[in-house]
Length: 54
Ligand SMILES: [Zn+2]
Image (tube, rainbow, N blue to C red):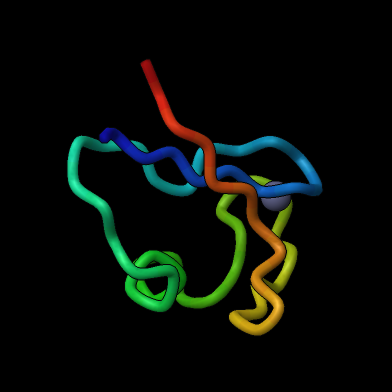
């Protein structure tokens, strides 16, 4: 199932793809902050939204 992770603050897509990635890996790719709004992304609780993509 494809995965999409978006920033809850600005809706910026942090990750979208066919592979399920662990949240920490996704955060790592963005240096721990949202590329859209610069909000620091915390891992626990993860303040991003994970939605299945059709
Ligand atoms: Zn953001």
